[in-house]
Every structure is written in structure tokens, then in C-alpha cells.
Image (cartoon, rainbow, N blue to C red; front, side, top):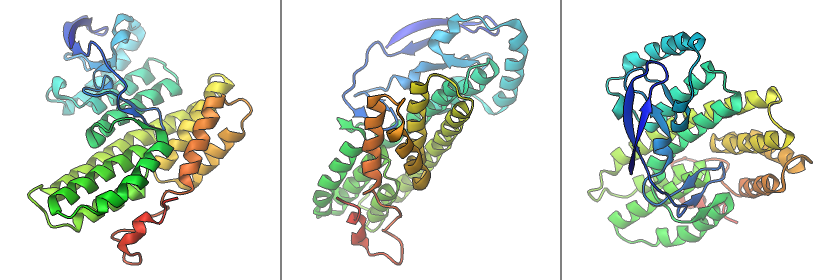
Length: 310
């Protein structure tokens, strides 16, 4: 970590923050663009919140002046939000990103920029759910690892080991955007006698964090859709955001909308080849991932969790 000196552009107050001096990509990446390092995730530190005004923005933005005409509007908004903030330095990274998105809107940033802040904020919550899973490379790779590992998890013959294994599978499924498989893994873990792991509490916390991430993903998707409706950016940029919207639809359990958006990207002549490839990758997974929960549902036997496997 290294110390960085900053000045709040609203009130001129100086303060310091610590940021990572280096990072790595050993954890792979998710279909919606989230990449992972082993150790601290740099995105946790990329948004800074001033301790005096709550002005929140990427570190590099603190070098930019805020016009006097906009300061009053920013301050009014932050004063309203700040009533519930007791300790700025204890703010979760996701909350700092939400504040940054609110500031960005007032400062006239476009919908794509605002959406990126919500999306990265969602990733900081995902970090607390999935931890470090090495070298997962997108949706299809996550699916392959999930399907290959599941029989070994089912073979674990002690309560403690089986509970941990099903939680790990839920983490992998969450990274892949397999929402029903994730919930099935947690439901399977609930069928195992607790072996001193306090699993009920951990499942509740897992669900709470998934809900929080989903709130931010939905805000990101809405912002990206707004930017697309306004025809922002180049044709290639719009195609990339249509892909992201499709993948976020999938992660938010709107499979029909996801399929429609991703198929449109695949057929879009202006979409870069890499974007089309990503769309095909996610569409392939959409064909096999479960369309609904199978564990804990009265009409479906437990073993149906594997029914979506290719």
C-alpha cells in the first residue's frame, strides 16, 4: 500500500488515503467484465470519499476543479445523504461507489460513466461473496468447472467438509451468474447437519450480500439502457454495452431479456468480434444453466440440480 495526498474539490480540505501499489490478475474474470487479483482487489480503493463533505469520485478526479455553479448542488445532495453516515472511513466500498455515481450525475457525466460506477460498486460486493477463486475465465469456463467439480462435492462424506464444499460451489456459481445453481448449492448445504460452522447465519449473510449486489447491478443496467436509448457513444461502444445489459439481465434472473439482448449483439454488424464472442459464450451457458431452482422445491427431487449439465 502507498499513501496518496488529496484535496477535496468542494471545501479545499486536505486528507490522505492508502491505495495498493501493485496488483495482479490471478483470479481470472467474469462475463460482465469483473476481474480478480489475489489479495486486495484494487477496485475497493479506487473510489475515495472526502471525510468532510462526502464528495466521492475516482482518485484521479480529485485533481479536477468543480465549478462554483455545481458546488451548491453537490453539497445539497451530499448533505442529504450524509445524515445516515456516522464514520466516513467505515463506509463500505459499494456505498462509496453509489455516492460517486450520484456526484457524477450532478457533474454531468453520461449514463455509461454513471453505470460503470454502479457496476464496479456491485463488484465490490461480489468480492465479499466469492473471495478468491483462481483462473475462472468467463461464463463457459465457470460452467465447466462447476459441472466437473459437482460430482466430487457430492462424494464428500463428512458434514463439515460437505458444507464447506457446497458453499464453495455456491461461490463459483455466483461468479458464473448461475443464479439457480447458486441457490441450489446453498439449499443442499442446509440439508447437512451443522458441524460447528454456523452455516444458517452464513447462508443468511450470503443472501443479503447477493441482494445488495443485485441492487447495484440493476442500477448499472438501467443507466446503460438509458445511454443506449440516447444513442451515446460509437456503434462499437453501444454494442459492448448491449452485451453488458444482456449479461446483467441473466445475472438478475431475467433470462428472456438476456437472450434477446445477446442474440441481437451476435447479429450486430457493428459489434467488435470480441464482443460477439463474449455474447456467444454467455448464450451457450444460457442454454444449459437451470431456468429455475430445483432444490428445496417440492415438485423437484434433490438430484435435479444436475439436470442443466451438458
